[in-house]
Image (cartoon, protein in one colour):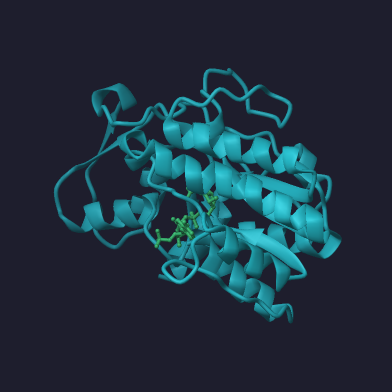
Length: 267
Ligand SMILES: NC(=O)c1ccc[n+]([C@@H]2O[C@H](COP(=O)([O-])OP(=O)(O)OC[C@H]3O[C@@H](n4cnc5c(N)ncnc54)[C@H](OP(=O)(O)O)[C@@H]3O)[C@@H](O)[C@H]2O)c1
């Protein structure tokens, strides 16, 4: 999802982007990784095992892709002096804090996915390469399947839609992630940053916002996360404090509502 949007944004800026993806490129294959890193000036890693529930039963694979491969990527990049941009997630937190999470807050992942992504962050840092990690949350965009496409599909089915109102965060447009990533690439920014569209909403609030803009009426009900047990536990508070990255950007980060309006208009 993110890589497609990012590639387009980089190419619009005149970057020569080489894409490496499954099945011909496997990030957990050392030789594939070495060749890809050697051929690049900078490395942007969007590859990840992103099936959050699937990671509970496939934790070894999740760890291989999201942690070990990222550490190895860092080691190869350090040896050749390459800067790496990598993406992580709000799932590194347990969501029990009563305020937005800053980069200095202690992670405590609830799921195998979150654990594997946190291990990836730590291995990348330990590799000694020049790196930038952007932690993202609730991303959506024109490519791939995500919370908003699922809402739209459920709206089309005609029946009432139930959405949890106790998970709070910010839906974040891949277009905004791409724009911010460009800044990071141009300035070779290093360090750990939280990035999300501005403002906060529950998943229920997001669904209400989306459904209000559809031509048909959709019956929307509130429910609680505990009512829908899933294999992987999700943090209830996913709010990010984005002041650290905002200080590097030339303009205010867009509100989630503004980005969502734009996305819905383009459908
Ligand atoms: N989506 C979100 O809400 C969200 C939130 C926070 C952070 N993030 C992070 O954002 C980054 C981009 O995720 P995304 O949303 O773009 O997810 P995505 O659409 O699932 O993209 C991940 C890509 O990685 C590929 N991949 C998986 N295993 C691989 C391997 N062994 N070697 C090479 N490629 C492999 C996948 O290929 P296949 O499709 O063939 O498996 C897929 O194309 C990830 O680091 C993710 O953890 C996402």
